[in-house]
Amino acid sequence: MPLTEKAPRIVDTVVGEGESTAFIPYPDLGENFENAPVHLRPDLYYYSARMGFKLNCNKVYLHVPWIAEHLFRLNNAVMRDERNNLSEHLKYRIALSVSRTNECPYCVSHHAGTLKRRWEYEDTDLETLLHQEEPTDEREAVAMEFATAASLDPAGVTDELRAKLAAHFTPQEVMEIVVLVGFWKMYNLMHAAMALPIEDPMSGLEQWMHVQPKA
Image 1 (spheres, one colour):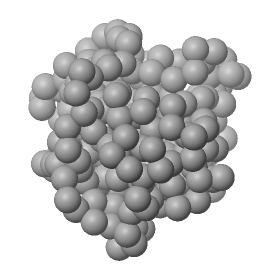
Image 2 (cartoon, one colour):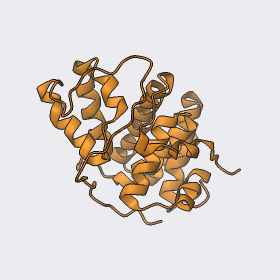
Image 3 (cartoon, helix red, strand yellow):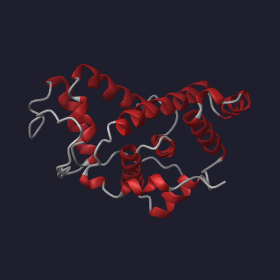
């Protein structure tokens, strides 16, 4: 599948995320985030408009809004900043793969949903991606190899693999990949450790946790 770029779809209406609860209560943010800190409301509106529902992860982050604001900014910088060289499409493909490797159902469901919504992926496209059968090109194959190895055992990444990564990507692109892998490792850890409930619109997409790379 070619790595085409598409602007995020801004939804006309926000649907309900469901009544599931986390192991700690969600803060009362109000129907339209009117109870959230005013400087965080644009980020919360953006995420809801982009996804089409309120995210459970953002709710729990708002218990520590002084930390949440940096998480939102880091997420946007890693995945969507226009100064990045690597495409958002490629980054979501890598993010789905590493989130599956890190065994985070919440992130897997969100990445699969984003690929379906933004780039019109069919189930067969997701299966091919997670099997790591048909990378879009040699660069993606190397990026996926590095991302998987770094997620499983960062200290075990070899000089040979680092050299291969550096041969296929510019220094900026290498760091975009490294930060991407580390960012999702952090999010995967947090969301899996909290057993964060998956919102109703993403329900069922956690099935992609069970697709493994082929030998």
